[in-house]
Structure formats: structure tokens, C-alpha cells
Amino acid sequence: MAAAGMASLGAWVPCRRWSKAAVFGFHRGLTALFKRKLEGTPRWLPACRQKTSVSFLSRPDLPNLAYKKLKGKSPGVIFIPGYISNMNGTKALAIEEFCKSLGHAYIRFDYSGVGNSDGNLEECTVGRWRKDVLSIIDDLAEGPQILVGSSLGGWLMFHAAIARPQRVVALIGIATAVDGLVTQFNQLPVEVKKEVETKGVWAMPSRYSEDGVYHLQYSFIKEAEHHCLLHSPIPVDCPVRLLHGMKDDIIPWHTSIQVADRVVSADVDVILRKHSDHRMKEKADIQLLVYTIDDLIDKLSTVVN
Image (cartoon, rainbow, N blue to C red; front, side):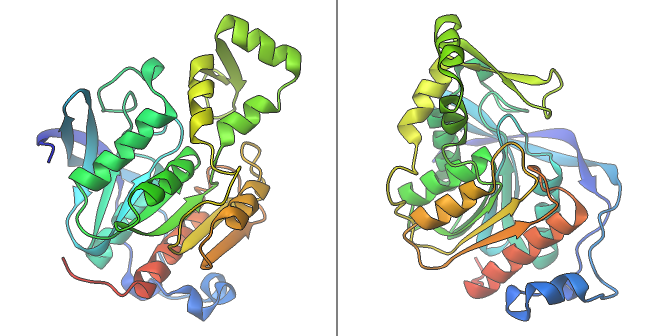
């Protein structure tokens, strides 16, 4: 078991808690979820500064991982962020507040080379980040877990479910980017791919980067090819929920349809939001996300740790 050291850092967290009275499962219907108005309906309010403790997972021969953990009931929930995203994003904090209100265990963390975690980003790979996720499951989480993966995190959550089928009891993907970076690279014109191979760096345009591009090592793309999943059935048997915005200009919503088709589980739902983009961080997107988590918790029959 890896050792965890403690540190105290400031983080932005929402100023309120979710009300249990406002949360109900999908068995009441998606239409009802968005039309029904209750006094306790969660509202996304401006964040306020609060002091939170961030822990560090020490791993032999691997970078220490920064994380925040809530103890609580099972199944626990683990949020797996997107590419170069840290654990302090809107979705990660919203899920934390939701789990706190229900008394369920929750973990959010930073990948190696990202946020407060140790490591050099330029040395990171999809394979290394896969190991990060497995370290969180093996060394921090207790009992069964629901994994919530955003973008690249959606790709990694499937790898975790395949590697730890006894621990992972459900998956929720947000703009799931299975094989995403490899697919995007392969769609480039031949001459562009040759130039990237020669220079060793791919300047991938992105409106989510401050510089307007992400600089990916060619070696990163080649390593990622070893982790592609869409070429064959995905051996995951647990419930899977895939949320995707139809305005996503990074990972087309059709990717979630492909993933659903490849997953061997019979319990798979794809939920599309017509006007949502890749990040799915608006109020209605967050509500859909927490309702989905609540529905799966109910489905899996909560067990107290």
C-alpha cells in the first residue's frame, strides 16, 4: 500500500451543498428532471475561497499524485479529468459537493505532470496516466467505485474497468474521448503527419488552450496507439452512461455511439445534449451529471463502508 502525505492548499469550492430533495433518478424520466421545479433544486453559484487539504500519494519509482478524498458510503465515486485538466474544475467540484451531501466517498486527483502532482508533463503518456488511475483505485479507494471520466478521462476509465473489473461497478463518460488523440492525428493530411514525424511535435489547435494549441510529442501519439480500444469489442460488463454535447467540436458525439456499440455490457445508455459543447460545464450539464450519478448509486444499492 502506498503511503499518503498531507499538505494544506487553497482551492476553489462551491459555496453551497446540493440538496438531496432535489435529486431523483432517471426512472422518473429525463423530461421530468428538467421540467420539475423544486425549492431545493441545485443552483450553480459563484465559487468562494475555502481552505481544503490536499494529500499526496507516494509511489515507488513513480511521481507522487495530488488528490482530495472524502470518506463515505459505497459505492465511492472517482473523477478522472481530461487532458491536462486538474482536479479543481467545475465538474470535479460539483461532484464533490454532491457526494458530500449524500455521504458517499469521493476522490479527485491530478495526473502525473499536471496540477499539484509531481512529474514532467513532457514525459507523460497515456500509459503512465493509466497507471495513475489504477494507483488511485488500488491504493486510495475502498470497495466498489463508480468512475466518472471527462474526455481523455473517459478513455482511461474504460482501461481501469478492464483492469479492475471487481472494483469498478459503473462508468459515466463525459464527452468520452476513447482513442481520441490517435483518431485526430490519423485524420490529418499525409503531408502534415510527415511534418509532425520529422519535427517530433504536433501543434494541435485548441480553443481551450491559452496559446490556442497543445504541443504534443510525436512519441506521445505513438505510445497512445497501444491503448486504442475501438478496433475490437470493449470487455466491460458494468453499467455505462455516456453523456455528450452535440456542439462538441473536439470529440464528435458520434464517438460515444461508437463506444456504446463496442462495449459488451447490455446496460449502456448514450445521452446527447443538443446545445452542449465539449466541456459540458453549464448548469443543465452539471445537473444531468449528478442525476446520472444518483441514478447509478440507487441502482447499485448503496452499501455503507
